Length: 157
Image: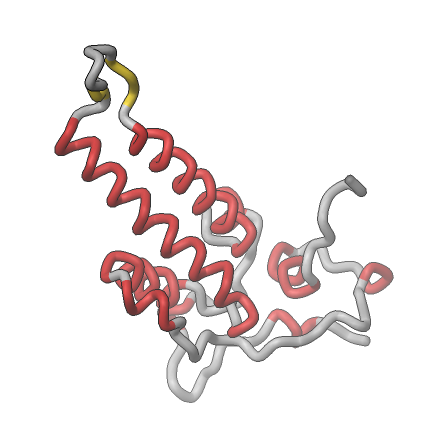
């Protein structure tokens, strides 16, 4: 492994750590805002609810981030299903031979929540990763005539 993955220029700008000498001039500049909803999200009602919740607050994401956001929503949906199974059936199951073992849904929920946490952190959606970002204007302060400035506005190539 080569060390930490590179931080995108837009995230460096929002975090206030952007240095002109470290700008990747070949980095793609996606348009901001998510305009597509993946079909698989529509097939899972709880995933769609997570999609609406996360997409409304993640104004700095773009269509290039759809796959990661889709993963977060599906993982949260699957984790909720697993937790509901544990709630209904208990944390321990009894096998036909009389032995008891932990319910498989417990590990499924743990794995899905860990996956959602990792993807959320990569997108800047966790409290820790959000704390490292600095928004130029609070989203509620945005009006139709006052579009939020892009983090790319500060980047000089």
